[in-house]
Image 1 (cartoon, rainbow, N blue to C red):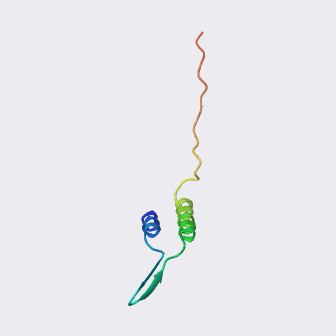
Image 2 (image 1 turned 180 degrees about the vertical axis):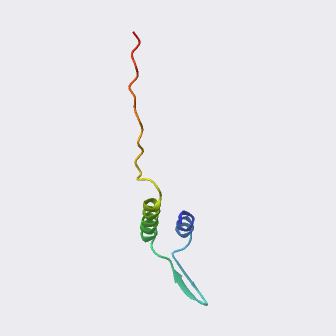
Image 3 (image 1 turned 90 degrees about the vertical axis):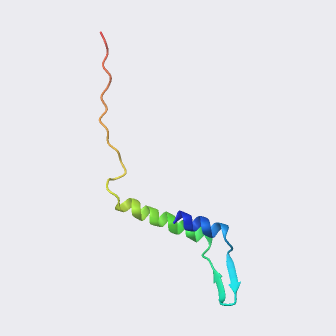
Length: 62
């Protein structure tokens, strides 16, 4: 999706030719769609997004 957003951002917004005209979705809508799809993918991934680690305090040398 990032490549499609990059292509759409560098290309023209509207193209008119003999066969008709084409207009892309606004860049703001494309970014919102990308964020939505990324959040859906993150929700499907394993894990809770929280990493648990056991912390043990360092000992003192006497």
